Length: 198
Image (cartoon, rainbow, N blue to C red; front, top):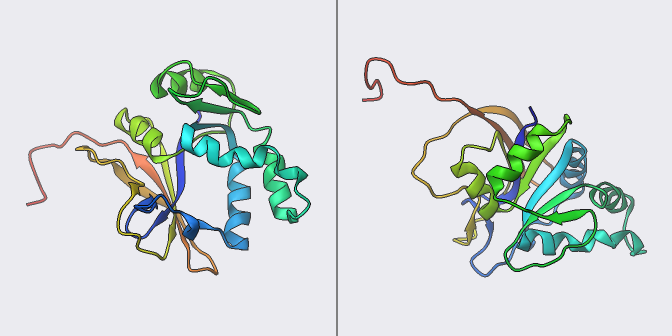
């Protein structure tokens, strides 16, 4: 069964954008950008909300920009044909290799998992990820942690009264002092005999 992954850049205090909506601090260094290129190769379909979809629309025509370097052209060549599912109550149409979701996040993930394929089902955007997490549908969390405190904004992790146990899969530190953290969800076992944590 295909894994559902949630990957975003995040400040050290846990936000994907600051209180003013700013995320210029997430501009990737060359080695971070190369890492994201390698990551997107593993994805079969990308689920996103309206805000992320509109932010990423640039890449639908980026290959026409003569100022793009080779890495950006490579990203555009991978992103443009990638199937995308957009969750929005305000959009009536989407561009490129995208479609509007016909159901909720759980229904879409169930449908996509039933289809043949080995690649990942990636989720982008904190609001959409929170909905998927509330249903226990996120298998892996991947955070690119930037050395900045933004003091508020949209949190990477959903604020919910639910414990999720994780195991560390990978860490990597980049030349720009950015740290990548990759965790996999671990199914919780029912406690035996009572509390042991004091």
